[in-house]
Picture 1 (spheres, rainbow, N blue to C red):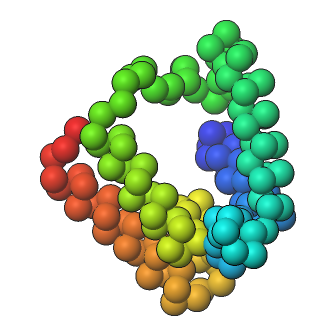
Picture 2: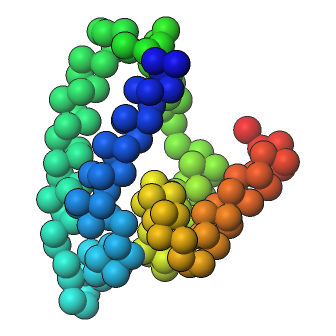
Length: 136
């Protein structure tokens, strides 16, 4: 029960951060990605802030045990392969076209907008198809 409560609080806090930073607004995200047009650099501050926090936290992460778990699930693979490059490219292209990524897409479901329902449904269908493909 405590783990579920902490997960709910963490997810809510993350959602609020996405909303306050403007990451849930596709026009703002596309404006940030349009570096040769009317570039909106404000999301760069969000990215730099996130990078700094992660840089500091990851320095201490391996030394501590999580409050609600047995250990952290950190990637062990350090090499690049076609799956990582292809997945990254598809994610980036999708983000650039739609202006939304999975986290903000899920937050935007609360608007009940067909655009976000289709986005999240397509994302879930893609994950299901990937699971069926057997690629590891």
